[in-house]
Image (cartoon, rainbow, N blue to C red; front, side, top):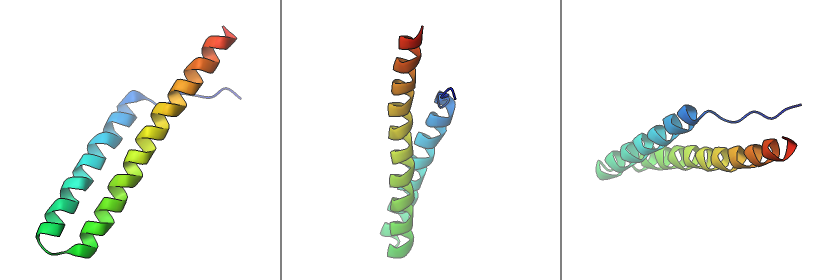
Length: 69
């Protein structure tokens, strides 16, 4: 089965979402809501991990498609 690249717009949306989650975490830590801050930090890290995985996967899929042609 042929692997498909992750669309760059999806990766961009994940980057924006992770930045937003980081800002929410900062706001909650400054308002002494530590639990909410931790939750938003975990979400931001999860989204950034997904972005990095997407970039690596797209590069590997591109290399595989280049070798087949």
